[in-house]
Image (cartoon, rainbow, N blue to C red; front, side):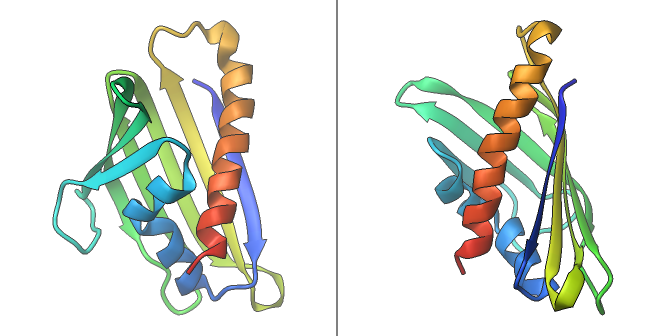
Length: 146
């Protein structure tokens, strides 16, 4: 499975960076051609499920996910959220970790290990580089906007 990670250090308190990254509907504004539908009641917890619908018009696919680890940051300790991807097209997992960085800033690490069905492993490098670029931009947008 192609693995990639994105790291950012931002001038935000840890709790605010966490909030911006884990408000799932906001991801639809940050990832092009994507809409997020949360399937379970708020607040987010282990077992929260949502679907990212990516595409244009009838051409698209669903990326259903479930929160399997939900540990928000507390008292300066890092927070960790793990998502399992259960789709027919995309499988794997994603993690968002937010902890203390230098100078009172927040350090964000977004990791994913993803498999795209029907795509040979020959393309793993291209998938990882493309995903790193797309999700790096998404992380930037999410962290910039309150």
